[in-house]
Image (cartoon, rainbow, N blue to C red; front, side):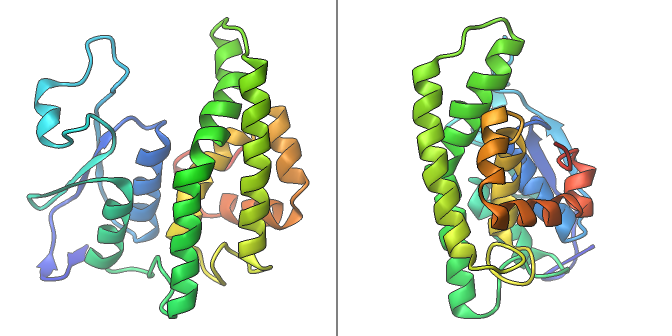
Length: 220
C-alpha cells in the first residue's frame, strides 16, 4: 500500500459496520485495494459516543477517518481523499463531464435519496416491524413518492451506461449502493427498483463486485 509520498500507515474508519456512510468509505478503500481498520463507534449506544470522539467529529456523526496522523470527517471528503491518496483504479472519471456527472449523482444520493430510501422506506417497512413498532403509513407513502422521483432521476442521468457515470464504477456508485441495499429489503423498494430496468441491471453489476460481497451487500 502506498500513498503520495511512499509507504503509508494503515487507515482507520470509525463507526459501525452497518452504517450506510461507513460502508461508503469502506467500499472506496476496498475498491482501491487498501487494507484498513474499522474502529467501533456507535452513536446510538445507550452510553452515547465516547467523550474523546468529539475531537474526531465535532458534530458526533459517523464515520470519522484517520490516515497516518491525518484526520477527516464528512464522507465525501474522505472518499475523495482515499481516491487521490492511494494507488489503485481511479474512483472518479478523468473526463470532465463524466466526472461532473458522477459528482452530480453522488450529491443527488446524499441530498435527496438517502432519507427516503433508508429512513422513510427501509426503517418504516422493515426495521420498525422487526422491533415490534407500528409503521407510519403516511411517512412511508411520502418516502415512496420521493424514492420514485430519485430513482427516475438517477436512471435518466445514467443514460444507459453500465455504471452510473460511465463504463467503470465511481464514487457515485459506491455512494448509492449501500442505500439501495437497504431500500430493496422493503417489498415496495424492490418493486420500485424492478420498475427501473436500468437500475436493476446496475444493481446486478454492483452485487457482482468483490467490494460489495466483502461487506455483505450482495443480497438481497
